[in-house]
Amino acid sequence: ILNVEQSPQSLHVQEGDSTNFTCSFPSSNFYALHWYRWETAKSPEALFVMTLNGDEKKKGRISATLNTKEGYSYLYIKGSQPEDSATYLCAYSGTYKYIFGTGTRLKVLA
Amino acid sequence: EAGVAQSPRYKIIEKRQSVAFWCNPISGHATLYWYQQILGQGPKLLIQFQNNGVVDDSQLPKDRFSAERLKGVDSTLKIQPAKLEDSAVYLCASSHPGAADEQYFGPGTRLTVT
Image (cartoon, rainbow over all chains, first blue to last red; front, side):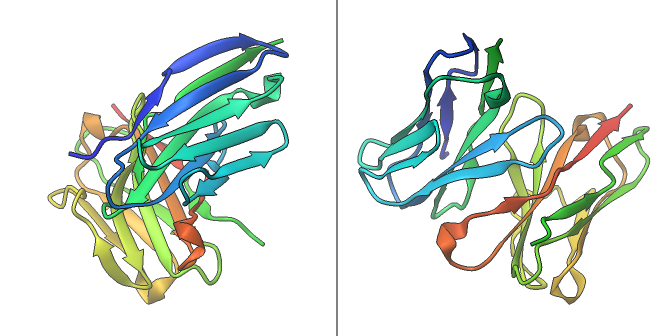
C-alpha cells in the first residue's frame, strides 16, 4: 500500500512567524510531487510541481524542496500572514497516479 | 481562462436518496478526475477519464456510484442510493496531457447525507 503522509496535521502560528511542513512519499516509481493550497470553500490551488531530486521552487514567501531518494518534500512559509491560513496538500504521482496526503491545516493568528 | 466549474456547491439529502454532481472542465483539457474528500482525509481518486474513456475507476464503489463523460467534455457523477458515509466534498479536476500532470480543481460539491 502506497502512502503519502504529511506532518503536522495542523498548527497555529503567530503572524510573522516562519513555518514548515513535511510530505513523505514513496521513493519508487516517482514522477512528480505536487503542493496545493486549499482555502475553505475555494478550489485547491496548485503551488508547485517538482520532478527532479534537489528541486527547489519559490513563489513569494513560499518555497519548497524535494528529495526523491529519501522520499520527502518540505514546504516553507516565511513571515506567515493571516491570508496564508489554509490546508496545504501534497500529492505524489508515480505508477499509481496522484495519491494525496491528508494535508496540514495552518492557522495564522493576527 | 475559465476554471473548472462544478454544481451544485452544496447538497443535503437523506440516506437512500439519489444525487448527481456536474463538472465542466477547462476547455481543451482531455483528462478529467473525480475525487472524494472525507473530512480529515486526503482527496481519494474515484475515477479518471481520458476524453470520454475511463482510465482508472478502481476506487469507485460501482454498486452505488456511476460517472460518465459524454462527448469528452462535461461529466456527471451519480450516487444511488446514498449512504451516510458518502458525506464528503466531491472535487472535479482536469488536466492537459503533459505539464507534469498538473491538475486544476473546481470548488467542489459538499454533500451531507442525513
